[in-house]
Image 1 (cartoon, protein in one colour):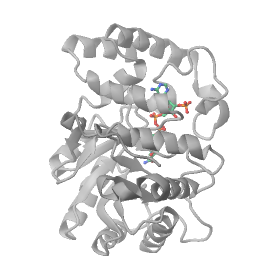
Image 2 (tube, protein in one colour; image 1 turned 120 degrees about the horizontal axis):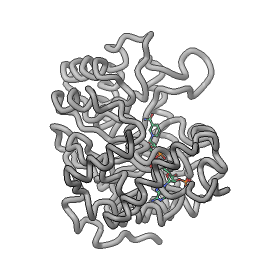
Image 3 (cartoon, protein in one colour; image 1 turned 180 degrees about the vertical axis):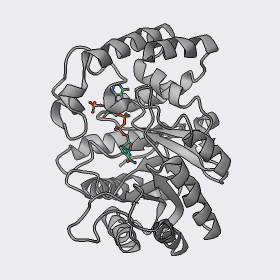
Length: 329
Ligand SMILES: NC(=O)c1ccc[n+]([C@@H]2O[C@H](COP(=O)([O-])OP(=O)(O)OC[C@H]3O[C@@H](n4cnc5c(N)ncnc54)[C@H](OP(=O)(O)O)[C@@H]3O)[C@@H](O)[C@H]2O)c1
């Protein structure tokens, strides 16, 4: 019988306010995109989720299509909730999303009201929940009026099936428009979920400023560039790594000499700061106050421990940031 650590909330500085809202999120959140599918070890998934909660990670991020197969990560999490975490439901922020392909026919992907609201009902059933904390539009839909997609998020909130609305992968102008519509509907946008890491900096020129202006928080996904910003690939491609066994989104060909040359230099620099490369990469995304949380994935408990350790040193001097820029250039 799981019983969470009594010290899990001992560090109030581990939480950051999400935009102009009442919600605080942990600096490190756990995503269930990989390692929580039907073929993955349930015991390992359970150990990762419970260790995360022991360390103060209150936020677990899902989507309808996480698995494989699609939907199975929600089923796995539903099982962990029932067996281990149900008693602490009020201490958890659980999110899910709809936007990518989920079922055949014209109503199984993108941004229609029909798809979003049916998908949310399915997600709730798979997880055995009455409501999620955050429901996201997973990606913008160029062919559906933004009013319809945002209207569906607002309806999810008004019906009580979600507490807050969020958007993911929206460009700056789309974000501002979505924020305006949601505000007018009385269900303000809580959060944006964009990709962001040392190796992918598209949010820096405009999106962060838009979020700041709109009072929207952000949770940045793949802050470790799916494992590239760690020491995982320094001695080849381990069979149990993402590039070694689940090449849907990270192929062996992505582990190039050029990337390794950069990440090895970053690793030396991180060590000099007394951190692992993963820890420095997480501290680096969290240097923006508009970034509420870094959304990691993990294939084992020790990675969660290491990632949470990032919060022991979140500070960079101007000189250190300049050194990092030089390596990344
Ligand atoms: N909104 C969207 O469109 C979208 C898209 C993608 C992801 N996401 C969300 O973001 C979450 C995180 O994405 P991600 O898994 O790509 O994030 P990530 O944190 O960049 O990569 C996670 C991988 O890095 C490795 N790792 C993690 N910590 C480590 C450590 N301390 N030392 C060494 N290696 C470490 C592990 O790789 P190994 O498995 O090789 O051990 C782990 O699976 C997802 O679960 C999902 O919730 C959202």
